[in-house]
Each structure stands twice: as structure tokens, then as C-alpha cells.
Length: 295
Image (cartoon, rainbow, N blue to C red):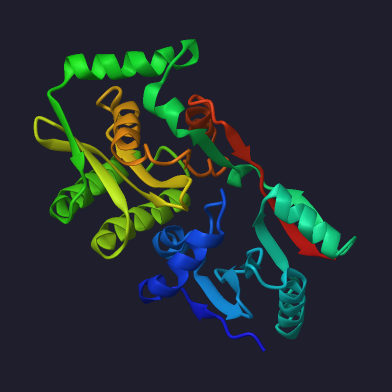
């Protein structure tokens, strides 16, 4: 019988090395994401024969594809029995194309698959975001040049001393944007940002702060997904400072990501403005994801 427990910060020594070893490009079940978005998804986990099983227990339970080097087929069978016992249909979320093909091979005609466009990850070559070369990035270079000419700015790595001011900035940012998008998703994001800042000193996250006249006008947080991929979890800027998002993006890449091949800037949640912004940086990979439901 499976016994799931909530993902907590104290689970970091167990879960983070495991996930670092076995994750490729997918970011949904990274340890920082499960901690930051705890209130939105209520992440749970259990270990079965060197396989990590993860689940989001908010509302209807959904499960992740088994993580690890053990018997995937056996692990999924255990999940099937577990969900039957608890009277709900097994739903696996955030499946990559590779996971989908494995599932179809192990369980032919047992699952219905649905493409989940709003959850696709946007993955970029670090060198592209660092150098912004070529005609396609001309507008980004223009934003940066205009920002540098207009503002007296400084950038430095985020430290715990910056947290209170970042929290103050986030509160102001939330008030300014509260009516601009879905209020529920914005509130959940607000909680995630506050958790990220609140736990910053207790996690292996990196961050950056952009100041104008010594005032924080942008900040960002992220962490290595594995040895090849860096994940950006949070990026905030005041829109009144033209080019601030472009600046914090490039400066963070320059400061923290030059030893990685890719940067995963996560999904667009189906929000048109976010999708447009992420596409404007010309991702190397748009990582498709699927939802699978047992027939």
C-alpha cells in the first residue's frame, strides 16, 4: 500500500539530489517548484523500490511519471491499484513526449492522452540569451541599450539582506497588476514568490537584483535543474522601467548560467501575453507535455 507524505523543506536532503540526478528538461517536479507552488498544488511523494512517485493532491489528485532507475511498469501498476482503492481514475500529468511513448509501449491502449499547451516549457540555449546575437534579437538589444542610457542602475546577486525589500517590491507589483490578469492565478503566483523569497536562505537557489538609484526595480530567482539545465523560477520587474525585464533576464544569465547549456524558463499557463514574451526570445526547445488518463 502506498503512503504519500507532503513535500516539505526538510525533505530537501532526500529529494533534491534524487531529482537533480534523474530530471532532464522537465521542471514541474523540481524541488524548488514543489516548495514554491506548495499552496497551489499540494505536492506529495513516496519512494517505492528506488522509484520516486510524486503527486499533486489539490482538488482531484494527479500524479507524475515515475522518477528513477527502477521498474517503471511496476510503479505505474502500483499507482493504478492505489487510485482504484481510493476510488479515482489515475491521471498522469506533465508527461513529455518520451514519457508518453514509454507509457504507450508499456500499457498499449490503456490511456487517453491530451496535449496540454499551457504547460509546455520554454527552453533556450544559454549562449542565445547571453549574447542576443542576430537580427531576431535586435529589439532586445535596443531595450537593453535604452535602459543603460536612461537609468543609473546596478545589478548584484540576491542575498538574504535584500529579501525584505524584494518582498516590499513584490507587494507593490501585485497591487499594480491585480486587475490585469486572472486574479486566482495571480494570487497563487504571489504566494509562490513570497515562499521563494522566504525560503531563499534555506535552499540552493541563486538570485539577482536590479536597482535604479538604489531602489530594487527587478529581481529573479532560479536553481540548477541538473548539470546541464538551469531553471528560472521567478522573475519580476516594474513595467514603468522600460527594458527592466530584458535587463534582469540577461544579467542573471551572465552571472549564474554560463556553465549550463540550457535555461528552462517554464510555461506560459495559457496566458497570451506570457506566451508572446517567451516566444520573443526564440526558444530552442518548446517541451511538449501531455496529460494521460487511464481508460
